[in-house]
Length: 420
Length: 123
Image (tube, rainbow over all chains, first blue to last red; front, top):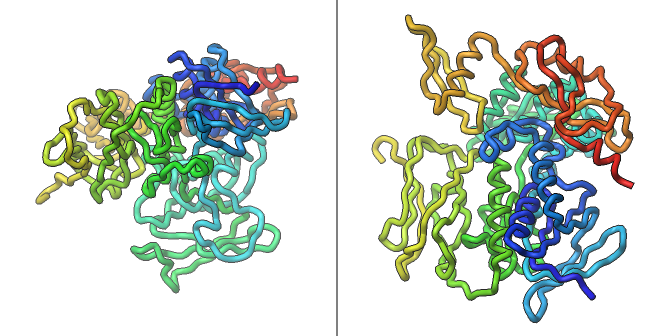
């Protein structure tokens, strides 16, 4: 007979662990599936500190943060399959899903009433940022460089250039410097840095690593191993400006050029994705467009703090445990152009909306600004922010119990700076 | 007048330091930790340090470690050298001391993962 679970969580990183613990605490029979040998996800290699400030009021390293959850997970006696890969998910005719999982024991079929997709995100690669030239060794994503340095104990470069000012790139600039590599500079095509301001300071300024804005890598040189990269200035549309090229000798190019939520499994289920977040369109309980399928963590949208990843995992876990297949009355939220994205993207009018947690980012850096949520002409909620920066996600909880009937839901961000 | 960005938490407040007759004044900080950080930056900047230490276990060649308390910023590379001279040959658990009183700074280096003690349990 096939195993039948109430909740199956796919992914054993911070989102999946929190989801499984929350669903178990709510009384559900839970299974967690992880493709790696150890639980913890990307936190295993994030050995720097700064995790858990919101949740634990402590500055923990990635492994410390993850292991707190892993210990809780084990103490609860929740079923887990590691070194296991989910290859297919099919909806069952009587509700629920059948998963095909491949592990060292072979192929297993598992039935589950609900699914939580906690599959995290992937790094954009050199192919996705159109760098020309040869294909030498020495071009790594920041995550790969981090894996080699922090888990394998191998230094991937002696002298490198970092493309992209995302947080992992900044963290790796410091990490490689500490281990004795020379980091020649961080090049960012955008006119503003992508990473958190504190990381610009503690990772670059502390080690005198220069940051070049509006610059990008346009070409790589080298046959077997990278020998140099070509750097160009870019214009407002991030197009390289001819005549500005310069060649920098190095044996490593580290790419920190963005993260994309991983939703291959979600797509096989026909889950609708939001082109802004590249994660599933969800309601206030983090249920996707597919009833019984929930999303959380970086699979839902790329977070900058793990504390919020865990929080969304817990939300999804509780909601999945409580899932009973009730009909939804979904009201999409239209967002204004100043918002880069807003999660959740829709509200189920039939659900208990007494505490809906929203996450958003502004499209561009803004001074004093106001977020406003409306239903038709009625203002449901507004909040003023002293400043907003796209790298820093904002989170807020709103009581939406008394949603006026009818009327479109809208969210918009207005600048309150002089003249506006 | 000097401006600096707080690194205590992800909020990253931009703070302004001013020399006043009553001593240093700090503005722009959202909490007292920011003020303390700003003042330390002008006197003795302190940092935490997270790195790895080599192990004697082939399945996990490096173990994540960190200093238990802050160390002076200008001693970071001395502490790195001290940690890089160590090989962890026991199945350390999270919080175990890897190096006592590193460089005489009064701060221990501790393991931040139970990776080795758990690897040992596996068949």
